[in-house]
Image 1 (cartoon, rainbow, N blue to C red):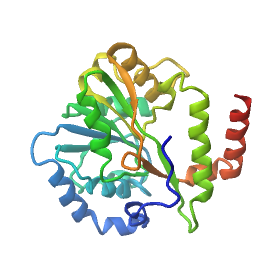
Image 2 (tube, helix red, strand yellow; image 1 turned 45 degrees about the vertical axis):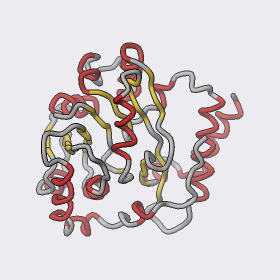
Image 3 (tube, helix red, strand yellow; image 1 turned 90 degrees about the vertical axis):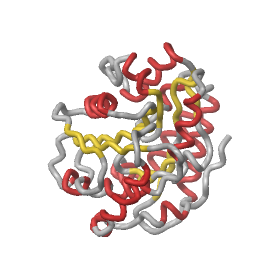
Image 4 (tube, rainbow, N blue to C red; image 1 turned 60 degrees about the vertical axis):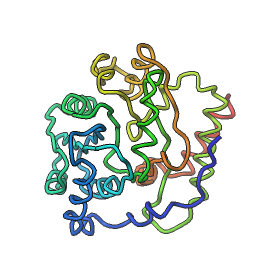
Length: 267
């Protein structure tokens, strides 16, 4: 089992700055992203965005530091944002698309159809990405037996403080998956970190899913049934870092920890 980090790495800490700070970095972000895609892209990173002005530039900045020999395009699909998301994204050099049909399924499908890369990577607009994430997630897809890769995420706090409580919470979640036998790997495929071949995604009608299903997990299930295995990518290079803001809004870590512990005991 992958041992979770007790502290946030330097590339996360260096990105814990305000949206206003990143506005002043847009030219630098644009220059770094341009170097990732001097020719036709091999990889397309698709990011749906709905009212993400607080985080979108931080996410793009983290991706701009990617270390890879592959050519990479970044696609942001705005899904009717009413804040300054579009204003912040413009001028960074990424491909900005608009999807008027509300819902992440529609945004991801638009990104999939318009992507130029052979490989598609799902990313979220409120996360910080490792410089090695792109290669960690896409290189295994060169094996035709692998239909979809997926990674894990860890929390960072917007406030000062250590990560020990999050370390325990995330580790308990990893144990739960082990005891659960990972009977259905697709349920652990998240939109913040997963990848597949574009041709395969189009062949299974992208993110279309029945009511009540999760669009990312259901796509993974369709890929598994038709094209091959789902491969979990472990290690710090593939770990995606996301803010604890939403976790706090849902009742805080204690409530989430107790709920996860109860589920584990029931197993």
